[in-house]
Image (cartoon, protein in one colour):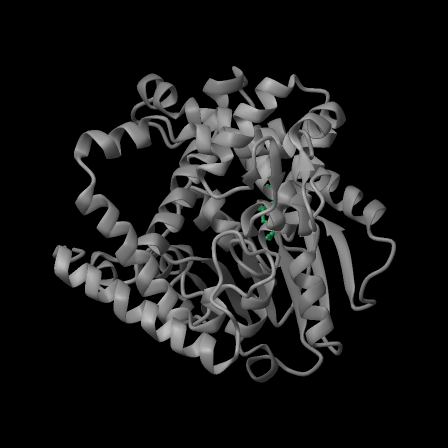
Amino acid sequence: MMTARSLEQLSSIVSRNAAALSRKLEAQSISSPTVRDIHSPNLGDIDSTAATELANAARELQALVQSPGEQLNLLAFAYYDTISIGILLEFNIPELVPLEGGIALSELAEKVGLLEDKLARIVRYAITNFVFHEPEPNYIKHTPLSAALARDPRFATFLRLSMVDLAPIAVALPRALLKWPQTESITECAVNAAFDTDEPFFAWLSRDATRQARFDQGLAGFSGAVAGRSSNVDIAAYPWGTALPPNALVVDVGGGSGHVSKALAEAFPSFRIVVQDRPEVIEATREASTSGPGNVSYEAHNFRDPQPVIGADAYFLRQVIHNLADKEAVTILQALLPAMKPGARVLISEYAVPTPADLGRSGQLLEAKMVREMDLQMMALLNAKERTRDEFAALFAAADARLRFNAAYQVAEDPKVCIFEAIWDP
Ligand SMILES: C[S@@+](CC[C@H](N)C(=O)[O-])C[C@H]1O[C@@H](n2cnc3c(N)ncnc32)[C@H](O)[C@@H]1O
């Protein structure tokens, strides 16, 4: 369990790490940033350990000093944190505010076609979360958070998907649990309760081409530089160049728009990579990608059917297994086995759920929260889950005793992401 720290311990962690960050800023002649400064580097890039420890301690400090009533009231309305940003994105507001200078609320209201009073109230709510600021009455300017929404449209698409398309599903989770308390069925999820549909999430998603496109682009955006988990982490975490031969054949099963495969193909031009996904995703990807590395090809394949690419060096499943309940995950792994040659790898790239022992280490609370958010998302969309390292090992063992769990690979820059490697050892 996480150890609870006293007021004195927490404040000293905050001041110690703040001092360490200040010293590093000074050494690099960077002036100390504020939450309004859109041109300074992230403090996490200056010293990630100090920034992480400080953020975790500050969060615990807030929980310690605020009354339960104050905290629960903030939590009770936290959906407006989500919804306010969703509205900003729905109306392209971050892009309409110039990065340099700013804009009068009246001019912005005219551009977006909303009543100025409503727009001002929505923006002023977002300001309480450091998204925009109002340096003078009725005039708004960017902060680092609002600027990130404007600077990275793919990340903004991911957030828009999450905050507008998927939020109603999250809200229906209590209803779904009351209706189907004991289920693991893929058609008895919050998505089914929210939209009164009998279809599984991915079928429901593809009923609407715009929604499907937003999902595919959003996932690529989630893997971008400022977002949740960078594709670079997948490239850096696994020893692709030494574990696999120079001309390795890699299959990206459920690879979506192929954004990770493209990054892998660029890093290893002698690899051949096949991206597999549902026919509608592959078709949309082929239409959208006019250019891209020549060593990536695309193939429609249902991952429940036997794997058609025989004898690949690695079968890579990124953010695929977390979409599946245990029984289904085992079936999908088993569908790979007839195609595998001895020594071939199954590589599963997912968040690793921290164990209670991990949570005892300081600096884990915010990270655990992110993993747990994704875990509840999987429950709501697909009755699926995020897993611990031991749970992944158990999935490999349940698929086949000859699928030997070999190692788990992580990088310090994003320790919540893990590549779990199993080797086919018949
Ligand atoms: C969460 S996404 C992950 C995409 C990509 N690997 C990534 O990390 O961004 C899961 C992917 O599995 C695909 N998928 C779902 N059901 C599938 C099936 N039966 N056969 C093949 N792919 C499927 C979805 O279309 C989606 O692209």
